[in-house]
Image (tube, rainbow, N blue to C red; front, top):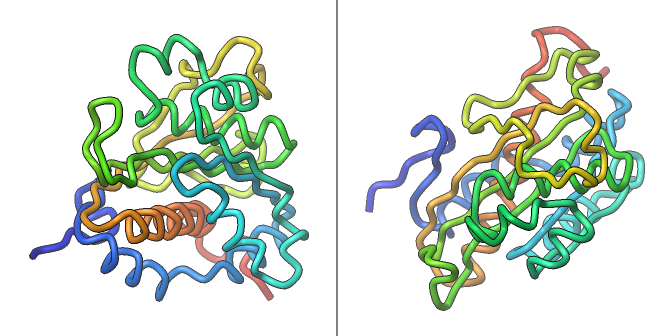
Length: 223
């Protein structure tokens, strides 16, 4: 089977979940993510649906992770996405939870609720059955960064991200009054439930890494 690699499709990554997870894991080091965040004075929070805390756990496995990781929300059902993360209730009802705007809003909500500079989220269908009309393996990874921190460090959304303008957050969502850069990436995965969840975690880590590497060359490099 042919496999698309990270960002080869512009805003979509597809292929075998185990292969994608393995390739991402070899190239994405949570230690480096924590170190880069800490060096730049950035904090990160997670919002997870299908991965149910696995993304936060990967970051927390790093010794000294508290220098950057402030917390996370496991939002497995829509009421939690709305009540804790501020995802617009109408959007959840009309589009379902597996949606690019929902992923971006979850990321903003996690950062807004915890005071973190960065938010990263996962929402999708791990199986064994389709959900809300979405096929198994359909996953969206969301990413959000406070605009002030992005401007301070010269960060910008990875090219693989579909930008989001913030319309999927409820008016009373955490941090909704602030300015953000936010977007999402579609992962179109093949594999069993465990493989899809693993690949989703790796995809989220990869997206954070790409954001941290988007700064101008030579600016703020770790010493």
